[in-house]
Every structure is written in structure tokens, then in C-alpha cells.
Image 1 (cartoon, rainbow over the protein chains, first blue to last red):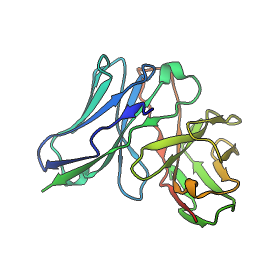
Image 2 (spheres, each protein chain N blue to C red):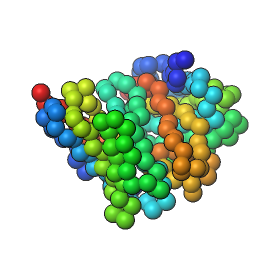
Image 3 (tube, rainbow over the protein chains, first blue to last red):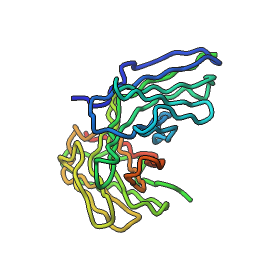
Amino acid sequence: DQQVKQNSPSLSVQEGRISILNCDYTNSMFDYFLWYKKYPAEGPTFLISISSIKDKNEDGRFTVFLNKSAKHLSLHIVPSQPGDSAVYFCAASARYSGGGADGLTFGKGTHLIIQP
Amino acid sequence: NAGVTQTPKFQVLKTGQSMTLQCAQDMNHNSMYWYRQDPGMGLRLIYYSASEGTTDKGEVPNGYNVSRLNKREFSLRLESAAPSQTSVYFCASSTPGHDLHKNYEQYFGPGTRLTVT
């Protein structure tokens, strides 16, 4: 049973426009959510995160929105740039309730392609 | 400051062979993790170590063992490799915390690409 779902395997967006990547989760214990960006043959790099005590977090061109009642989060990238082309992973953890270390549960990823 | 380093970068094994994947971090993090990523899949947690001297199973631990050698190093061992263990393996580290007002992230290494024939 997949606890973190990214239902769009790929997304194509024109340069300069907004990219919106979506993520749904099923585990009510998740209270912290992260977005990672991954280029081929490299490790994931952290982009932005949000805890369940917030509904929005912004960092430059990146904004993450959390809708707890819908168990849904989204990543907005404005404006989209060619260097944003990569695979984006949504990840979740139960930080407050998890105890011990916080292993992440990942979605399958969305391949974002920015077209010139 | 190298962050999280992994060796080797690539490895080919025959079924039944054993090997150890090495991971080290220089960020003084308490927790370390091993994940695997298969084609078209997200990363899945194999084992983790909340602190020096402790290890726990993750989602997919079968066929693996781990050792937290010291605070810096966390190794993953395949005792008898199987083709199903062909994957890319990522090590990560973090300083965990339960305070949701504070930011948190896991830092990942570049990965080890393992093929078992």
C-alpha cells in the first residue's frame, strides 16, 4: 500500500510559467513533508519542507502548500527555469509521533520538463 | 566539508557474492539511513541508525545487514547477493528532532549503482 502518491509520472511546462507538482498521502501520522529534486546519477537534494502546523511555506521561487484535511500537498515553482528540469520526489515522515530516527517515505516521483 | 560520501560508485556482483557498501558523513549528524531506489520507484528505507550504537529495520530490510561503526560511518552489507538487489543505493544522514517548529532535512550521498547478475 503506497502511503505517499505522486500520480503524475511526468509534467511538461513552458519556461517562465508556473509548475505545479502534486502529492497525496494516506498515513495520518505523517506530520512533516519534504520535496527533493534529483538529477540523473546524483543523490536527491533538498528543496523545501513544511510541517503540519503550517499550511504554506515559501523559499524564493518555491512554495509548498499543505491541505491536511485532504491529505494533499503541492509544490509551486514560479517562474519555471530550464535548470528546474529534474525528477521531483515528495517525502513524508512522522517526526513528532515517530520517535527515534525519522525515516522518510517517498513517492515515486514526477519528471518535470521545462520547455524553452 | 564533503557532506555524505559513498563508496564504491559502481559495483557488479555475481549471484551469491557478498559485499559491503560504505557511507560516511562529516556533518556530525546523529542519524544515518540506507535507501534503495529501483526504476520508476521512489526511495525505500532499508535500515536506519538513530544514533551511534543503534540500528533498526526499515521497509525493505531482508537480505541486508548494517553496522554503525562510529558516529561518522554506517555500512550496508549484502551477505549473498541476489538479482533482486540490483538497485541504486543511497545513504543519508540527519539530526532528527521532534519539534515541528524547527526545520529538518536528510542529506543524501551520490549513490552506489549495484548490478547483480
